[in-house]
Amino acid sequence: MRHSVSRSMVAVVPLLLAACSDNLPTSPTAQTRLSSGRLASDVAPSSLWADQVEGTTANGALYALFKPVDWNGDVIYYAHGIIDPAVAVALPIGDDAGAIRDALGQQGFAIAYSSWSETGYNFKDGMQRTHQLRGLVNARFGKPKRSFLLGQSLGSEIVEALAETYPDQYDGAVAVCGVMGGTKRQLDYIGNTRTMFDLMYPNWLTGTSTDNVPVIPSQAQVVNAALAAMNGDGFAGFGKLASINETQLAGRNAPEMINTLVTALVYHARGVNDLIDRAHGHFPFDNSNTVYSSFVLPLPLMNVINSSIERYSATPDAAAWLQNNYQPTGQLRIPMLTLHNRFDPLVPFGHEAAYQQATTNAGFSANLRQRAVNNYGHCNFGATLTATTVQDLVNWVTTGVPAAP
Image 1 (cartoon, rainbow, N blue to C red):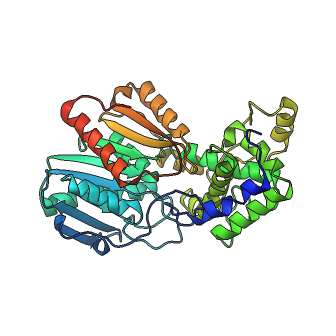
Image 2: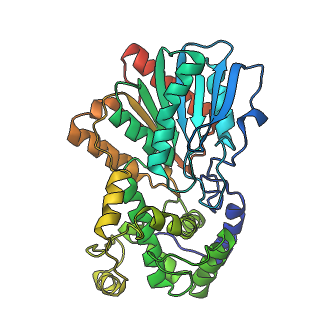
Image 3: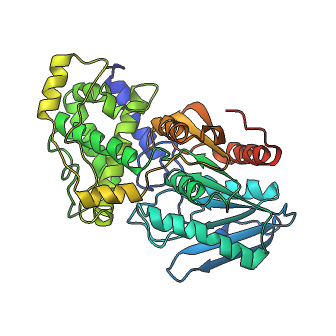
């Protein structure tokens, strides 16, 4: 076990959980950010924008476009993160997103963003809706001088895919707290964490790693069950889980690591049915050949864990869905600047190394610069740092001098 856990430490966790506000509104993650779904017209200051419009596309997605009074001719297309499948479609401009929009507008950038046609892990639709904004901007404001991409969380994976797929239509991209290593890497982390939790604490959570559940549990139900299970054995099972390489829990101390574990469990519980529906009736997780390892736990114990843990095999149709939704190619032909917390409780920091390796293998690593912040949290950078990161990307594109990592 990497950190000792006491009951007094655990008492901190409910306070962390109460502070949540994430791409998944039901996530327990403390310092996590994104949409509460407010309409843009509720928050946009009219003194900043010379023109702003909201509309609905034929497929039911909502969009909003903003042109500042002192427009510099550039536009930023913003892609939001995942929204809980139970939440209605709405414009993604709650939490810091509205402040980020206004901060970029004050720098002279036009802004465009869209909801997706439906919520959940709707990657392909999110990519299409974000790309569709180009035509809407051209029709309303005229063709911009340059086009930049900005994404958060799952929206960063959308930005990554747009940058790789349409390099001639965008000039640069910023990816914040992103699923840069691909959907499979993210779901492997979630699936391994849930499966290992079930080994340590059987029958505490509804269903299994790959089951469609009749009634999706609430955040509180998952949090309370997980904490009760861990309290029951003095957090001994948690200590083992936290020491396994395939379920590394982000955190600088025990409360943060517990918060990270519960975040992953809630993410799975709230999203499992949605993912099964999208992946042709099967949850796209496969640990049939995974050899779980640890730098801390003794080999005899790891042998027991590997022989006892539940095994799942992904069906070919689910594996194909994973490949299409999305596995990065690394063929990054435009500048990209990323920003990620080293201790991210929802999207592990290892995604950054995975994308760096992908661009290196493809021969495009010169177009990628990555920045790490030594903090805990998911997408909790605030408007000022996010807008500064965007400006650094724009300066890189303008001058040809790469942004500092």
